[in-house]
Image 1 (cartoon, rainbow over the protein chains, first blue to last red):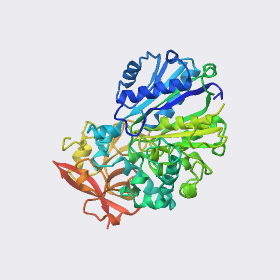
Image 2 (cartoon, rainbow over the protein chains, first blue to last red):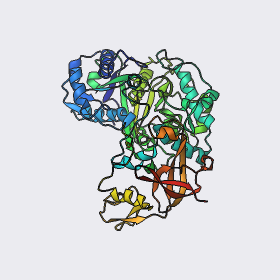
Image 3 (tube, each protein chain N blue to C red):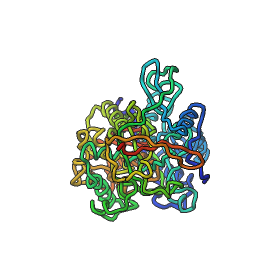
Image 4 (tube, each protein chain N blue to C red):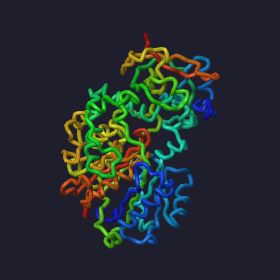
Length: 381
Length: 136
């Protein structure tokens, strides 16, 4: 992958947390308008639209709502990592001339929807097709990750305290972010005392459920030079599919990030030791441990010991989820776009918990039930 | 929400599997082209894409690969069952299945890699599911 061909030039979040003043569409619209302003370009320059997660014809609805008539469209739906896939797909479209400037836009309002009784607290997966073999047994999203955590604990001796250390570090990072939904410091003990959701995962091992959206603008090198801020270059991408049924995740202890990160790091010509800041999907604390191992930040099975002692805090050895992540900042359901936004801010020197001299950032999105990973490696200008 | 919302929506590929559960048999499929066994049942073998797949009855024995005890699920009927355990079992024949710990089996018997055996339980409205319990 040529290293100065495609860049991210605009990033923004919508208002997030609880946003009763914004419709589902308006969450998208607000994020898109702010990202456009961040990029300092004109709306007419956007000819690609990348969005997903709100129904089969959603890209068409969103194009119409935003007043766009793009000639490049993608609605890859692989869960929270769709946004990392979109960067890869936008890169390909831009590199082959099918697109000049792509808008990636996301939004969801699960918190307000629950208050308004438009949805419940758990996803009722229709027991049709493949899901007919698992839905009848009541596996919640948290329990699917609980299965992963339990096997990891059994094979490697990972402890509940080590899982909790991930949540503690994310909260510490959130303490620097004035917009974070949860920012009061927590301890390992607080996590272990929080109520059990899906053993061995406690409430504070689980991500938040918030409203919110985000937008990212990706463009070609020549355009990138004319934007308001310095470009952040896409230097490597990779994605990998594993499974959708839990019966088909084999082994339960290896994230598909092992393959996606190998591809992305290979393209970038770097290794995990070159990463200054990591944005790692944190749907649950165990997600982070599996991802660190799979990406090669530590050996397989050593993730528990690795995260202890604040290594993931913004001022630690491997600053991770410096905005507070899904465990403490925001999590509307498919959080991968926020990984890109925070990574870009770090590489521009704009982050609330800024890592000094951050030059290389890696983002790893995880979709479904540890089903898919997308890795994006970014470099400052 | 329809009370039966979680019942499997049987189709032409799965009907025999669910019918066999009602007869107390756990079915898998084996491929005559490559010799490998798979679950859930497919018309074409997921390993070699041959259509030469046929049904076989599993022994019902396996090992507990992992488990998670669900303490919170707002969806009926699971809400009323909490705490209950979701389990992954590696069957003797190779394939892995997701199921529940048998409702009358103690949760403190759950332990990775212990031998387990299938037990067919009538859930409601004629729905029979293969659950798992400790072998001894």
